[in-house]
View 1 (spheres, rainbow, N blue to C red):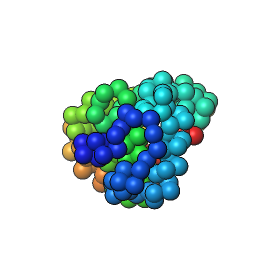
View 2 (view 1 turned 135 degrees about the horizontal axis):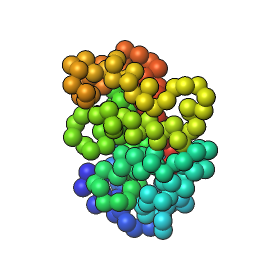
View 3 (view 1 turned 90 degrees about the vertical axis):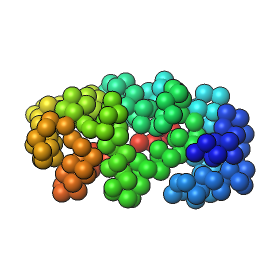
View 4 (view 1 turned 30 degrees about the vertical axis):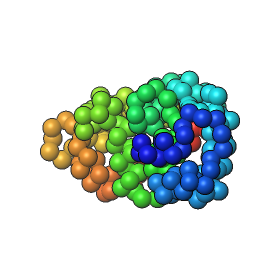
Length: 196
């Protein structure tokens, strides 16, 4: 990744060149034209065209959803900000977008697992699942009268997926449980697009 960052000259405000496009094209599932279009949109959306901040993520999600987006935007930001520096550069953005919108279910589930694993310890606890689901419910007003609360959904997911009963979901449990139920796959794998 470092060599791609050096090659891309990240931090500079300019158009992508041939070698830069080649490097990105080989690491994501987008065509050169799509990469150039995403770069153009990224530069319009981002602070000085170089990186996204948490505030910019919040602003975008505020335009897309009717409820409180703050917590969800923080989780999404964390899942894109792979180096943890508090900024999402174009490479991080494009790789996150590529993985989260991939047609490869296992790759998409891995991305979702990493987002749900808030503390990064390799498992998802009930409280982490509840935190993410609460943020989705607040953002979308999902539990408006249907009785399907984040608590109930967390209990259902853990009952179905926590096969060893330890109160945490490993990657293997998460993957196997999700693969057995298409509704779970659809719920757990969101397709973020923070530039629309």
